[in-house]
Amino acid sequence: MNEPTVEGRKLSRSFGWLALLGTLLVIAGVIGLVYTGVATLTSMLLFGWLLLVGGLVGLLHAIESRGTNYFWLGVVVAALNIAAGVVVIKHPEGTAEALTMFAALLFLTGGVFRLVGSVVVRGPQMGWTLLQGAFGLLLGLLVLFDWPHSSLYVLGCFFSLALLFDGLGLIAFGLGGRRIVSMVSGRLDETAPTSDEPITSPEDERK
View 1: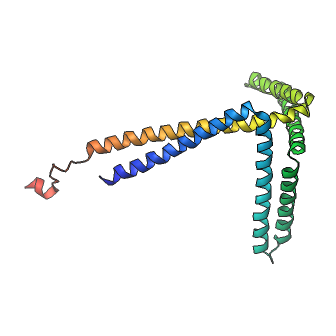
View 2: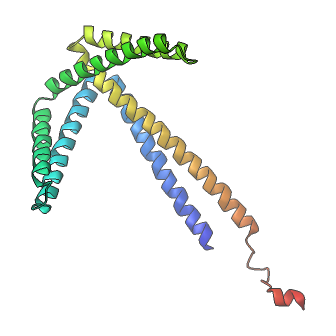
């Protein structure tokens, strides 16, 4: 077995693992869309643990760089991340409500700015910008009017959609990569000399 074939099989196996990971993410995204409340709490707990672990890592880096001008800044930032992570882990429902309110305000302000900007500028993409602004404004109002009940499904829905689209992207990348590797490996096998064929050098051809 020649070396290109072995490397091709390794690459194909790696792309297969990516496709498998994408499938798992798609399944998790679909389950999250069905159980948005569980997905919201899960995303909040993951967010809290990320803040906590990031704060601890930042604190270790700050301790290693003691004596520099950025020591106290690193300690303060790490302490804030640790405190925020503890709060999020202990109160995931309250954190979800606060983040949902923040997201609704972002949708509202973004929609208003897009609507006003498209009317003032009147560029070639005015219709598309108006549609984006109206959609953002409507989404912000819907989330805001249903708050705090909307905090039970908004963040979970966004989290699940992110998992779903990331999984679909990984599946497409993995299957496409495996197809390309199989095509290249097939061409290499066709052009590679067989064991029965003698390998001639340029000097033998001249003779």
